[in-house]
Structures are given as structure tokens and as C-alpha cells.
Length: 137
Image 1: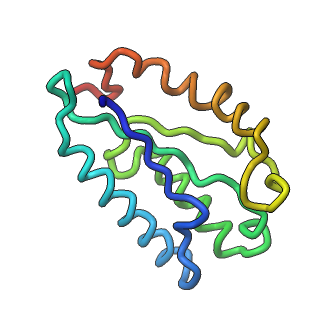
Image 2: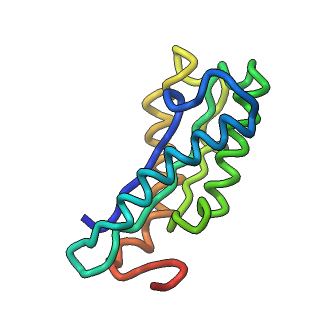
């Protein structure tokens, strides 16, 4: 294994607190996983590369300002490479629309396919080289 994708998403959103408190909780959870994974040495003598998959839209997030703002702040933190712990960021806002799927939570199959083709594949392609580290290592 050379890479790991970390996605904290709809089930990880704290249900109470300010945007700052919720964001801090999400960040702590993500960093806990990332730091553990960064300590793992892969088959090429390099640490695992960490991929930050953003928190996708959810119908309820559009109705609750605190959840909406927390999601945006969390994604902005990921886009800035999560305190230097992420090697890549995968933004899905351009692909996932609201309403989300038939239940307001899970995107339709076609959206999953579009996320893969429009976001994940192009973002991951440089990582096919097991020695690629975007910030050098």
C-alpha cells in the first residue's frame, strides 16, 4: 500500500457547537487518522501518502447554517493540505449538487461515477508513480 484516502463526512459532522468547535473536532479526527497513517512505511521505503477527500454536500447542510459553514471551513482546511499533513485534496462541490440523491445524503450512482472521472482520477494520476510526493520528501 502506498496511499490512503481519508474521508470524514456526513456521519462525522458534530451535531452541536459553534463552527469553530465543530471544525476543531473534525480536524482532530482527521489528523489522528492521518498521523497514524503517516507513520506507516510502504513497500518503497516511503511513508503512506495521504489524500484528503472533501466533505460532500448534503441537503441538511444547506438548511443548517452552522453545518454548512463548518463543511466549507473543513473543505478549505483540506484544500490548504490540512496543516501540511495531506498530499492531495479532492474537491467535489462542482460535481455534487443539492438535492443530493434520493435521500438527501447519498449521491446517485451517476454522481459517484462523475466524482471518480472528474475529480479522483485526474487528482490521483501523478500518484501512480510510487515515488511522487507533491511537496518533495
